[in-house]
Length: 229
Image 1 (cartoon, rainbow, N blue to C red):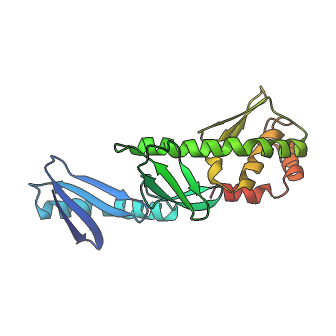
Image 2: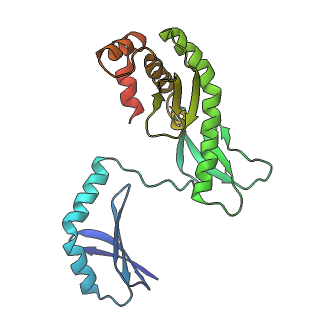
Image 3: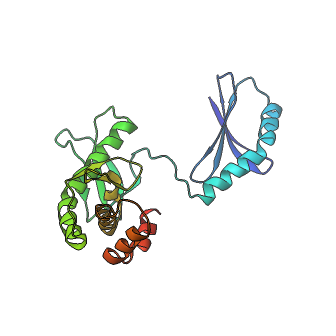
């Protein structure tokens, strides 16, 4: 494989020549890096013509990444920034058979992730999620007690899992909370809990529901905005 940096139509490109049959173009977050993989036999002119034909698409894709602040996919590797209860932590991988769970050093702002020699991104992700699940399990009881007293309602059950929404409440009075709330400020967890408890009074998101939120969580709009950032 041969790797080089070229500039075509004022676009900086990382070009990799490989033993492949087709040409591939990727625009990578977070800075919109342009990567092209090209067959070894392809001429410089053919590559340049290909880039020129894709120029508008490249610029559009780069603008989309910039405007939406799209982040690069996490690799769960040394030095990455991860969050716990709204605070930044640096991830540090350790090889230690004595520890099976992630460790948090609040003073140094480090999350230690014990991994075996052969570990995949998926396995590291799951290991970090175990930390978030444990943190949520520790935080939920006191938050539920506090918010239940505010709203005057108590669910039959509270579950924690990975999900698209921050929370959910079904007609069986079961509340489900997003595992990733452990990454956010603790106030966000209280907001979501109050939100779901209010559904035990008013199941939809109409005017009555919003009045309940104004009553039990006056700054809910500001917290919601922060939660979704």
